[in-house]
Image (cartoon, rainbow, N blue to C red; front, side):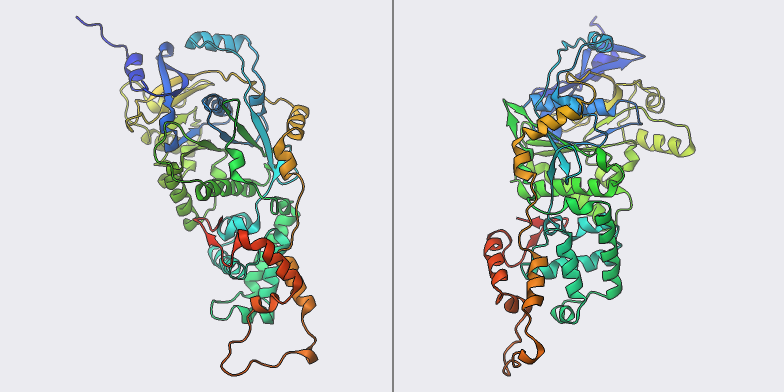
Amino acid sequence: MAEQESPASEIAAGYASEGAALELGAVVIDGQVDAAAAVRLPLATLNRHGLVAGATGTGKTKTLQLIAEQLSAAGVPVVLADVKGDLSGLAAAGEANDKVAKRSQELGDDWAGAAFPVQFLSLGTGGKGSPIRATITSFGPVLLAKVLGLNETQESTLGLIFHWADQRGLALLDTKDLRSVITHLTSDEGKEDLKGIGGVSAATAGVILRALSNLEAQGGEDFFGEPELDVHDLMRQADGKGVVTLLELDNLQAKPALFSTFLMWLLAELFEELPEEGDLDQPKLVFFFDEAHLLFADASKAFLERIEQTVKLIRSKGVGVFFCTQLPTDVPNAVLSQLGARIQHALRAFTPDDQAALAKTVKTYPKTKFYELDTALTSLGIGEAVVTVLSERGAPTPVAWTRLRAPRSKMGSIGDEAVAAAVSSSDLHAKYAETIDRESAYERLSAKVAAAPAPEAAPAPPAPGRDEPGFLESAMKNPAVKSFMRSAASALGREITRGLFGNRRR
């Protein structure tokens, strides 16, 4: 009579992988770990996206670290938002201790400390990493409206402002460019320029300008300008390992709308820039979207639809996206349904709202005969998670209570001095450290005003039958404008094409 397969082995059979896979840990049944029952995440399914969730202090950050270092070892670049500043340890080898030794012995893991190539970036000039920026033009009206907290009517007006600037080749590089265009379009001359395509009311312009002033007062103007980040700098290798890009955001914890929307801009830029790839043996890049609930909070229906569409389409570009948050219910159902891998750390169920969230979370998992999931999800220890992923056949694997492996890199920060040393020696710091302020909308509109003829020297009206000269024709007579147009023509063209989020398509 054949020996009956153990429950742990039966679960682990669903995680068998023909191709390369990340080693997450081993199956736990009735509190006992079975080191032979491995839980794996196939590299070929990582562009089907994923979710890492759990309450504070349950081990989410270590899970991100574990996945990032294995991706790096496989040659896959990784982008991580380091909101708390405690992921810099990826750059240094971990040190053995009693806890690591015990965990490794339980899992049969041949643990050895290892460091991974890391580059440190920050949004603007106030962070620890090399400063990166986006231009207002490329950020687009949809994402900028989210940062400014505009309603749908105000967002629509902002879209009109961008459209007018795009048509006239006016580059909006920083906040003063946008301010100058709004001011122009509320003037008598600006109202004439907008005839036929709508108008900008003084009240709505005032709201946008006040929101812009608030953003500038919070230091937000530092995040917009040039040189703009080239997203290909996120897709590097060093000695065969994928480079881990850490966006050091600990200085922006009080500005959640700004950094979460900037992360969405990065994702949108990757979608617009990268070619179609189809199904690959492993992703070209994996993007971890930490504190994901901040992105969805107070988001308009149109904004949520664009997120859903981006997540759905970017998999064909070879990019995997992991949303990281406390509760799966933080992520809208339309997005949650696209996340093939689920790594759920412990949940709390102290309040009625907690219990409702727990019940909803249980329903997002496949049925299992091995666990009572509502009990399991509140009983997980630190460094344990309930896991299900997509197999290489595209089917969900059995739910596995998993004891996760210990990261091989340092668990904790390497310290500000070490980060500063890494930044100063980085080629990206030399590329992005110094702000460039070339001619753009602000200078062009200022030059136009300065060059305007006095009233007595005004030109005669055009002859009957001729169209009145437009703004672009008049502005092109200014030498400064001609110089700008020569430098910008190759990059912008006459009218900008915009992507899903209104971000510039290059």
